Amino acid sequence: MKKLPFNLEKALAGEPVVTRDGREIEQIAHFPTAISKHELFACVSGFVNSYCIDGKTHREDGVSGVNADSNLDLFMKQKTITVNGFEVPAPLDSDRDVEGYFLASTSEPDFYDICGKGIFLADGCDFIGRGIAHTTREAAVAHAKAMLGINPEEEA
Image (cartoon, rainbow, N blue to C red; front, side, top):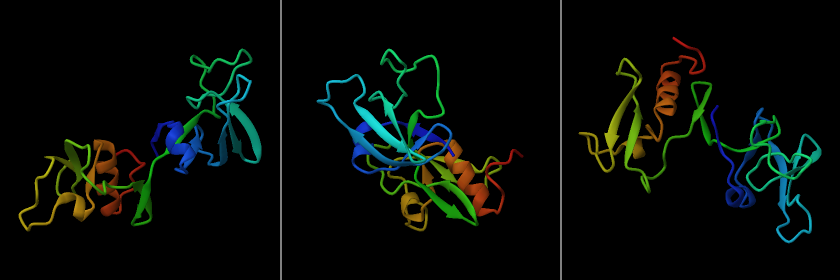
């Protein structure tokens, strides 16, 4: 499942956070007034680790490991739903701040279609209301494959 860039504000508001290797963060704390180069801490598998505010693990000099990715680096966990037993990215629940959609389509050979904001189906039901609108092509394809009982993780 795709990981989203770390967002400190969302993480502190309680949205789920995971490590690069997929482990869920059990607790996160920010100490912006601390007299320390370590102001972000997260509990991963029972161990407390220090981070830069961008979610990267600290090197000894206190600078985030820009050129060296770590399995402990933080990411926002993508919201998911289960379709026919497969975990796939959750569809959009509103069209706020979205100019267009990728639609999960079981009738298209590539498993997706594209649609502009505010366009409705012929039967008067909008794509968001039907739960098939996504912000990325990959999410729409995974959703459509799952609707057909195809493992979205496997290549065709």
